[in-house]
Image (cartoon, rainbow, N blue to C red; front, side, top):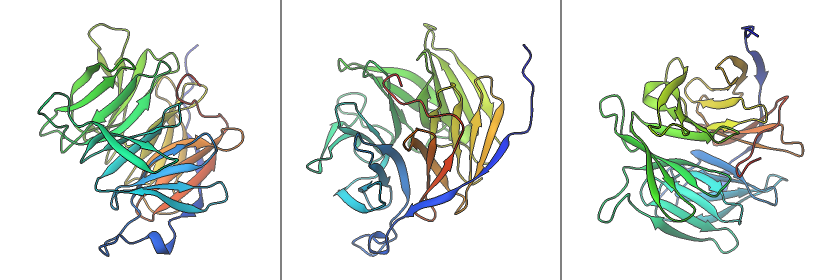
Length: 293
């Protein structure tokens, strides 16, 4: 059957919660509240990182905020392992692990090899077998297309998946986990990496206008959900790249990252980093979680 191409359905967001006034400044007086890395723990608390303040926030279902840890780092992405640990892509320190019950945070991988450091990690995603995919973005771009995507296997091995991306950012596996959708910010594109191919061939999945994509998620139908900062929007694309939904920010235009939650899994939570807000919208299809659902 030939796909019928239609204009995407437009949705409006509402503000779920915004950073409280007492947390909106760093200890040195600088601005805090550049939110990223939304991810839910097993109790339904929403965790976010604060890139500017080096903090990890926990937002309860009744919208109470607390700082789980504040440390010397630049956290950018956060995802929960099924054992309850939170893994953090930190642009300064590398790959870190947070133990939420105690607020203990440790660096587990600072570089791809001994004596080397990552360019600057950005985001991460778990496969069902526990393998961890993460992006090393740094200051790469069209002038320096050397951003990497790595896979840290559950057994501890480190594989290079992509080594030539101009600013690799968010990433998510397809439902069958035979493909990796990768946001490439400076190319204004979503790439599709064929993981079944020994050569790990890369194709262009979606080309976007203006500044490029950031966080990426998947829903139960296999549609690809893309946060589009500077446009102040989130897209939902079908598996063949058709735009199905266009979600407009009701706050600022820095819609950086996304996570599905809610009782039925159909609520999309969106970090809007310019206002320090978390936005929500209800969509027809539930999100597809990591670890196979």
